[in-house]
Length: 529
Image (cartoon, rainbow, N blue to C red; front, side, top):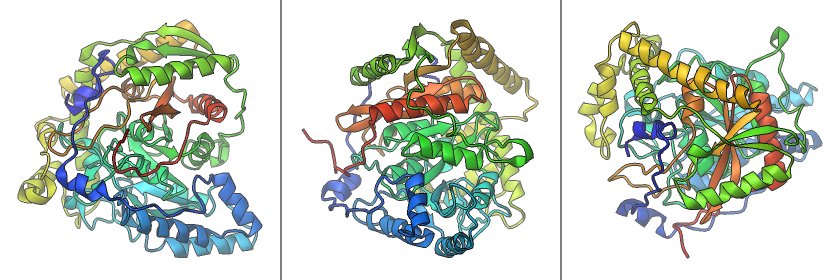
C-alpha cells in the first residue's frame, strides 16, 4: 500500500491487516545487543512535577536541562541509539540559567517556565540551531526569524532543547519511504521495540518523548504525522484545528492541512503546551486548557463510534472494544455505529491538494529564507537530491516531489475543485453533519495499529488509521494510549468539530486518568515470545 493510499484508507473503509517484514541486516545487527538503559530520575515526570521541583529548590531549570542532555547522549547517540534527536541547542544551558535567574527574582512566566522542549526539525528557530526538515539540501540553514511556535514557547519560558528527527520533508518526498528516516538524522527507532518503526513524520518527537529525552515535544501533522507516532510510541498527541496554532515558520506541505501540536506523556501536559502555543484570549492572554479537567469528565458525554475504522487488525479491535467498555463504565453514552463519507475520491483529491500546495507553499518558504538559502525552490531541491542520490536517496526516491513539480498554480481548476469537494465531504457532509445528527461531543476510532518492523527495502507497512477525516477537514484530533498489542502501544482517537480542543482534551484526560495505560518503553531489541 502506497503512502498516500494510506492517507485515504480510513475514508475508503480499508481492512488490510498489518504486514510485518524483516528489518534490514544493518539495522538488525545494530540493535541485536542493545545495552541496558540507565535509570533516570525524571522518568515519566510531568510539567507540574517539574514546576514543583523548581519551586521547592529540588531542581533548577539548568539541572533539568543538563539531565535531559545527558540522557540524549546516553541513549539517543549511544546505547539503544534511537536517532530521535538531530541536534541539541548549544545555548540550552544558558537559556535555562537565565530562566533560573528570573525565578530567583520572583518572575515565573507560567507553567512552561524552565521546561525543556524538543521541536521537530521543520519548525524554524532563529538561533544557533538549523532547520532542515532532515534534508541535506537545507543543511546549515538558519531561518531569518523564529516560527510563531518557537516565539510563543520562548515567551512562555520554555527551554528549546533541540531539534527532533523526522521523516525527511515530513514524509512527502516519496510513496515508498521508511518513516522516521532522514538523510541528516538516519533511521529513528521505536523505543518500545527497537527494530519497530516510530511512525512518521513526527517520529523523533514521538520516540524522544516516549523515551524521556525531553519533558515534552512539538510535532507537526498534515495527515497522521502527530497522531500516528503518538499511537506507536504510547503518547498523548494533539493535532489542533488548522489555524489554532501559528503556522508561520514551519517548512510546509499544505497550508490547508498543516499544523503543529503537542506530543506528551499525559493529557495535562498536552493542555499546558497548547496553552503556550495555541489560540489566546482577550488581550493575548493565555488560556488554561486544564481548568475544566475532571476525573468524571466522561459522564454524560455522547461519543460516536466510527466502526468503519475497525477491522484492520483483530488484536487492535480487542483493545478498542475494551476501551469502549471502559468509556461506558465511566458514564459515556456511545452511539454505535456512526458513519462518515468513505468515497475513494476523497483520498485521491487529498493527494491532488497536497501536491499543488506543496509546490506553492515550499517555494514560498524557501524564497523567504533570503538570498543565502542553500536551495530556493522545489525544483532546486529535486536537482540537489539527484546530484546527491547516494546520500539522499539510498532507500527511496522522490516520486512525489516530481509529481508536485509538474503541478500548476493554485488558480488551477483541478486544485480548486479537489479542495472544495474534500472540505464539503469531510466538514459539511462529514464530521459536522454526523455530530449534529447524533448530538455528539466527539467521534471515536482506533488511532492505528501496533508499530511495524522498519523495512528500508520495501518502505512502510501501514495497517490502518483514522486520521484522514479530521486532517482533511482541518479539525482537531487527539490520541490517548488505550493498551498494548504484544508490548506495542495502540491508541484511541477522539476527534470533532473545529475549535473543540477543550472538549477533546477533557475527554482524553478523563479516559487517561481512569485507565492509566501509558507505560514507559523497555527498549527491547526485537519482539520475543
